[in-house]
Image (cartoon, rainbow, N blue to C red; front, side, top):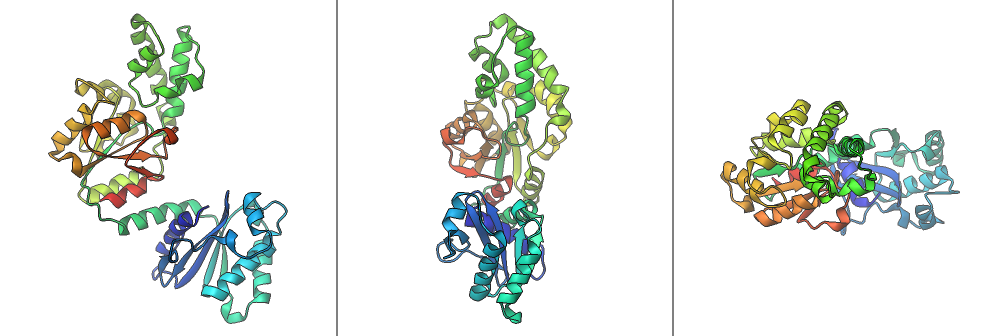
Length: 357
C-alpha cells in the first residue's frame, strides 16, 4: 500500500470525527509492505514530498526484506511495536489505527503491552484494531475530492458497461453461451475484445455470417436479461452521481447499447433517472468510437467540448472522447486493458471524479 493511498485512508478516518484527531497514524500491511497515513492537527500530512508514511524505509532490521516477501518469518508484534514507538517519538499520536490483517490476529494485545512497557505513559497512544479499511478509503476519496476541486467542469458524461455497472461477467457469459448454442465455440479470452463494443459489430469481427447475427443477438440479449439481478453498480457510483447533481453539474450517458437494449437491459437496474441526457448507439448515424453520440449529448446540454469530461473504460470510449475534443477519464475500476489505453486522466475510484467539479 503506497503512502499516497494511506493518506486517502487517513483522510477518511479523520473525517468521521468532529473535531478531527489532533494526531493519528493509520497503518496497513499491503503488497508492497506496511504503509501509514498521518493526521496532524486534523489534516492529512504527507511531508515535503508526500513520502511520509513509507514505513518500510524505517531503520528496522530486515524491513525492506519484509516488504518484498510479505513479512514471511517476521515477528509482527515486535515489528509493530517498533513502528508505533517510532511514531510516538516523532509525532506523539494520540491514536494509532491498525487495519485488520490475518497476520495481526491475536496480536493486538501483545502490541499494546509491548508499547506500554517501552513508552512513557504520556506518550502511549490508543491503539485500535479496525475492520473499516474499505469504508475509510472510500470516505477519504470523497473527502479529498471535495477539497481538491478547481477544474470547474459542469458536464459529466458516462459510459455504462464497465463504468457505471459491472456487467462484464454476465455479458460475456451470455455472449459465449449464445454463440455456443448456434455452433460457434470461442474461449472467453477470444471474446474479451468485444466488451464495450456494439454487439453486432463484435459478432461481425468474429466472422459470424450476416444472416445469423440477429438470431444470435436476440439469444445473447435474452440470456443477459434473465440475469439482470446479478449485475451490480460499482461501489461509489451512486454517491458520486448524487454529489455531482447536488453541485449543480449535469450528468449524461453515451452508450454503445441501442435504445431497446437500454430499455430492456438497463432501465430495470434503476439508475437512468439520475441522468439528464442519454444517447444510445442508434440515436446517431455513427456510434462509438465515432464522436457523434458524445457530440449530440453536448449539443443537448448546450455546452462546449472543453467544458465536459467523458468517463469510460474501453478503447472505444477514449477514441470517442478524443475525436469529440472532450477530456477523457479512464475508469480503472472497470478497465481490463489499462496498459494499452491512452487517456487524459486515470481514476481508480469513482469518487475521484468529484475533483473535476
